Image (cartoon, rainbow, N blue to C red; front, top):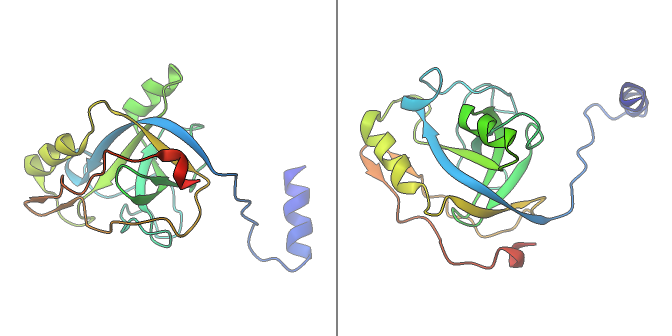
Length: 177
C-alpha cells in the first residue's frame, strides 16, 4: 500500500517523499553521550544517512541537528527532536547497544553525539561525556518540535574543552510545545 502512495506522489510531480510532522509532545528519555572514541567501531560512522552521509555531526540547530543514537523502532530514522536540557535539535541517525537493552524494557533512551567527526578526544572526551550525562539520566525531550526553539550552538566537546556548563537543568518541557 505504501509503495502505491509513493508511486502516486512521484507521478504527481513530487520528487521526494512528503515528511508529515507529528504533533508536538513531551517524552521522557534517558540521556547518555558518545563520540569518536567510544563509537562502535571507533570513529564518526553512523548507521543512517539523513542528509550528511554516514558521518555523525551537527551544530544542534533546526537546519543542522546534532546526531543522536537510539534503538530501532524507538524513534523514526531521521526523526528530529528537541532537547531542552541541551537546547539543541537532535536527529536520530545511529543505533546504540545500551539503548537496545533499555528499549527491550520499554525505557526510552537517547545517546547524543559529542565532539569532532575527524579527531578522537580519547579518555578526555569520554570523561566529558560522563560529565554531560545528567543525574537523574531521565529528562524530557520534545517530539515534533517547531523550528524556532531556543538553541545553544556551543559544541559539547572540542579538543580538551568540555562544555558541561552548556546544559540547562531547569525548564518547563511542556512550554516548548
